Image (tube, rainbow, N blue to C red):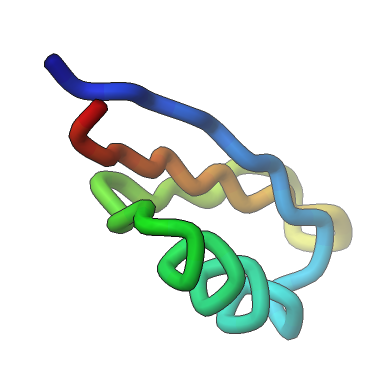
Length: 51
């Protein structure tokens, strides 16, 4: 069975740090999506790991 968590990142410069932090805890990135307007974008990272 898999465990899932979704993380919202406000600025694209933080994406790498968030991914590295979650990978150290055993998570792997499953899906990445960016949504918003040209002046404000939110980045959503969906991580998974085995229980």
